[in-house]
Length: 241
Picture 1 (cartoon, rainbow, N blue to C red):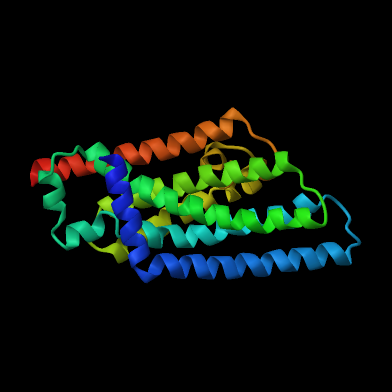
Picture 2: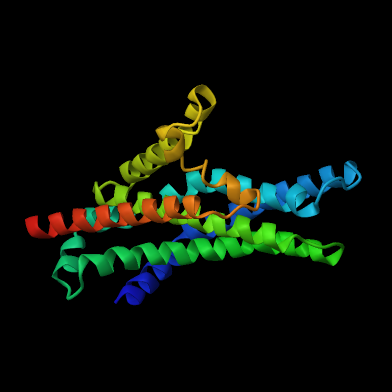
């Protein structure tokens, strides 16, 4: 049932203009960044590795851009079901809350993997005239996938908290922005609990080619915790239905 729900969510996403608009707008922005980095790299006579100079800025911009995009993708997952009074139908179906949450989560993740794959096309085009550091590129891709998995889990949880997709999107963006801004605490007070909780601080090492268990554990924990919160929230709704 998880895959059935995921397919349904992905299909509904592509039926709406939102999925196509996000793909189109993000690719235009990433294309402009890519061209700007190539121009800058050529003007500097090709100093430094082309992967770090041209490809990695795409992943830096992806983390910023998708901070705004993912709340728009996740806002309707549960909130719209509640607003349209179809959540009761899900509760009465022979599926568990875990299957519902994981199915909806997986549908968005598949879409984001497609988006990430389109981003990858641009760096691979550099192989026509040069070479790439595939280790560094793999690290950046892996870090981006973990980051997006955490973003999506938080957005899904916020969607379980309200019947308004708009409020869900605002709540998701607020939570993600707060976790992002925790990074400033390291600049002001040095390494501390807040800097560890910063969702971006664990992404930076991946862009430097460093994949360590500390950062992987952080993202897996964030995604798991918010998915569990979402399941518990829906179970509470089902018991109260």
